[in-house]
Image 1 (spheres, rainbow, N blue to C red):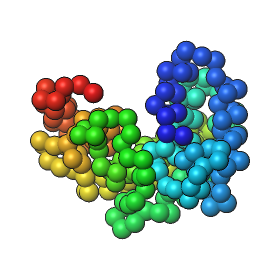
Image 2: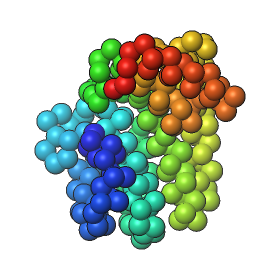
Image 3: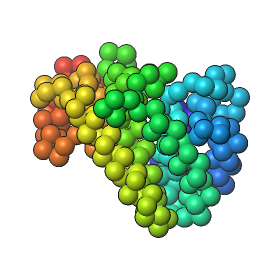
Length: 212
């Protein structure tokens, strides 16, 4: 599942993929456990109990890109229950302070090792992003109670991330790597008034280490 959210936006621009994605999401639903868990590899996941939020969040992130590209509300309606059950499964794993722990297996797999964010930061970042986007999809469906619940869940997660991973003006968030800074900015994990400092930290990092 991991690479799908990375390329979905571009693929939707280049190709006509609604039928492909519908089949893909049907396969995810077939693999989903009764508790809402979805394996990180579908079908035939080697470890049917392995948690990796950035990979498994594809169930929401790809649906969001599908909605943005095609505006096909019936696709969202068909697969909404599956997305909701997966997010509920992950929400039940939140620990003290609304933080997920031990929720990433593959790590920051698309960056240089020295610019990788920590696993715990990534897991919570993708959980927060998933809750926010599922709230927006619920709003598109007219599911007001789900919209409110998911947006509130995203807000709780965002506040927990700020309490736990804010690292000051020089590093910004987590370990101050390019990945941590970009995720904090792109996923709106930081407060609005923090964005200029994070951008400066990212520019400084790029000046010292070059671009990925």
